[in-house]
Length: 284
Ligand code: CAA
Image (cartoon, rainbow, N blue to C red; front, side, top):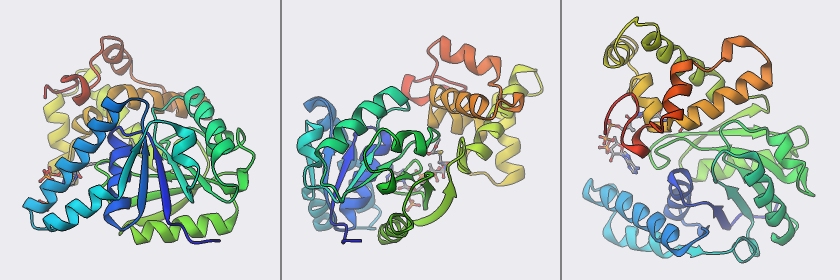
């Protein structure tokens, strides 16, 4: 495979700006595609803030911060953003129709040898690959929040992903200082197939009156050494995202063990989505 130098990240939200940040910090040129200037500005401000935090902790110098920022170029159109990409990573919201529309456009404008990757946390890589003309060059590259901190990249092979593409994505993940772990394409892959039932069960504990949210979290933090309790983590991930992923598991396996807790559904209906709305199981 030819060397990967130019990266395009589609979407500058929490995951997208984190992905752009780590690639740029490791010397890659990054185009960050957003739909509006204000969203692009917000993404760049977040990256600036996260880099400043690293400067104040003396993990990087001010010069490295500036060089990292200079390697990221915000772009307001998919076709412009991907035209010279070696690797395109999509990090837009978890909505199949949206991702399908974006990948059709990416496939049309990206060079024929470019690898297309999705940061989806649960949507089928095989199904997304099928909307493009290059399913062999399509792969899942699943990062974890906060991207600059978390070591894992879950590398998901679709049904037709070429092994050379998997090797290249494993290698580039290591160049980012990450630890890639391969998985095959089944609902929720490994990460969310294991994580989401735990979060859902924690919500059932509150729903059934087993314990208050802070006590559920204390049990898992103090007894199992989790850095965040499952309900705090659910707020951090977004309760809407948790519900979407549980529905993917439930629909994908047709197994009632993945049914979303009614309390989770009710909180999402009420617009209590966690940190992003200021309230979930806890207030921010
Ligand atoms: N950018 C850069 N650095 C950051 C950062 C960011 N966005 N956020 C935190 N950090 C750094 C801090 O500077 C700090 O660095 P030092 O250790 O050098 O001091 C370190 O991370 C820890 O941060 P804090 O001291 O502020 O807070 P903390 O010790 O409570 O850790 C945490 C915060 C890293 C988020 C920790 O609570 C944690 O690991 N939580 C679990 C996170 C998790 O499970 N993420 C996965 C979610 S699932 C997902 O993303 C995918 C999906 O499919 C749903």
